[in-house]
Image (cartoon, rainbow, N blue to C red; front, top):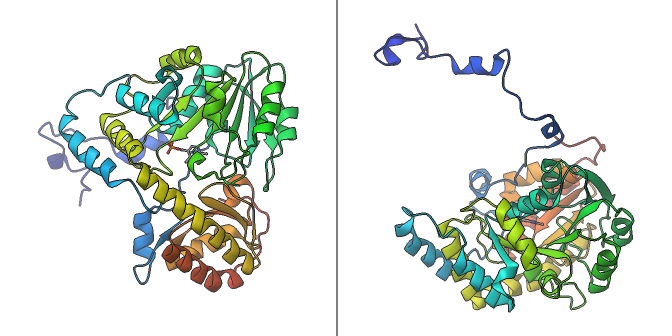
Length: 401
Ligand SMILES: *Cc1c(COP(=O)(O)O)cnc(C)c1O
């Protein structure tokens, strides 16, 4: 019997057989992406919430792998999304004036310092393409967010990778990696996955080390969860005229990861240049409407902050009581040394409806990044860890898949 692909009757009126799709993979001379891309890896996201619900035996789930906030978006942001749906037949405002001005108001800065983006990830790519070039260097801390490496390599820059440690930020190591060719120093504060954040004094030490024209990129995706007054604020530094590019997102504290909205704050002349790199309608109409509404609901943001302020110490204490070493964190997540192979633990936790992020991708096979959740989610996590951890092997140190 002919397969559908071979059956001429199923291939339109010409009777000509369509090519077998599986044969495409073996084409003799496919077009090839540029050679530098071989150094890049495809981003692997954490387990999706839907997958978890399927795996959970009793319907309880704890999606703690992607640092999303359990409260989700403000009701006003969801309402704004619904209202905005009627207008998607038209292009969005390319300059995203409503959000640019709302962000400027929220931080009491001039709107010319603000460039909106299709999520912080998009802002990081814009920074990489707008700041870096093949003659320049990028200082890339590890373990940290993978996008810095990607954005740097896309621009053809030379990477200077620096170990910053699992507890605290080794700022001296970052400083030592700066050379006269440095164009960008990437730093997340709080750092993902470790939770460590940059003090004002250390930010100044880094700024003092930068050559003229270079930028300290402070990725502040988790800024809203910081509670140490000695920490640097990237937006304040940029507003004071320091060569800082602060990057923020609506994905974490504002609970809008699914709509993709973020922005950067930098000197207005740099913002004007970077605006040329960003695609014309980067921020879609729905995302802009939701983000503006989210900024307007300060009560919801405060509730999101309070939940983390309560639950983060509870999570750390409960993990430490189980002999798990946890780094101090300024984010809505903790970096825990499980003492066993974390990839094995994470995959067994899925059967309990629990998702955490194993550290193999960061070269830390016994570590895991665990998002701060609700009391119920954390109770499920701890119950599942108690069931799973005693039976997990220690890591062989082999690279994770
Ligand atoms: C989650 C995260 C981002 C990505 O934010 P999006 O706006 O969702 O692209 C950027 N930086 C860090 C450090 C993050 O953890």
